[in-house]
Length: 251
View 1: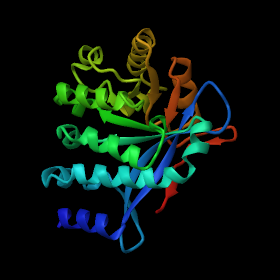
View 2: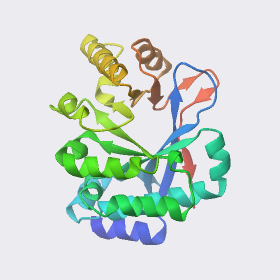
View 3: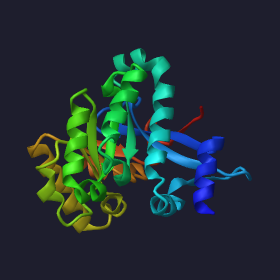
View 4: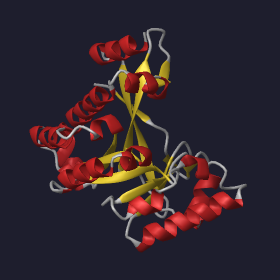
């Protein structure tokens, strides 16, 4: 049933894309960087997270198909406005699953789609979870190298959750790490979380990587992680006239 619902969502247009701002903490103003989030619209009008289907999608080998669907929709929506968005320094982050990474031809598919839509590669960032990235280091390195050749950038998502995080970081030519939300949610009350975030930021600074905190859900948390040196934040919070709630994209 779950696999059928995923396939029907792909075929019937039941998937919805949301663009959630990635806010720069040091500077006020409107965001130019966004993460693309995938949701499912059900017949009763409710919208649910794709997380409810990920286990089934992985089990039935459907994750690569989902990745291709998302990339096609994002590129199709960005293409008509690519020149203006590029001038404004905008970028949109698309998540790539481990199943896609394991396919040697997937990087060439991505390159081909970017070329077909005539989009500057810098408009699209690609995010890999730390778990997926370190599961097959050689495949991840190959993907990063192929995308770097055309100017696309790759970030490590959910960073800090793996036992070998720092060991593998030196082997992956990423431009940004996204600090896992479990360290961020309790940063106001947990000294260990603050210490770990501070350490990750220091390491990232030393090797020239940007840092993003996930699940920033209040202005107080945003202020705390900014004080720890984090540069960017993604989550549901408001700071002055800036909001970070996600905007729905429909094709």
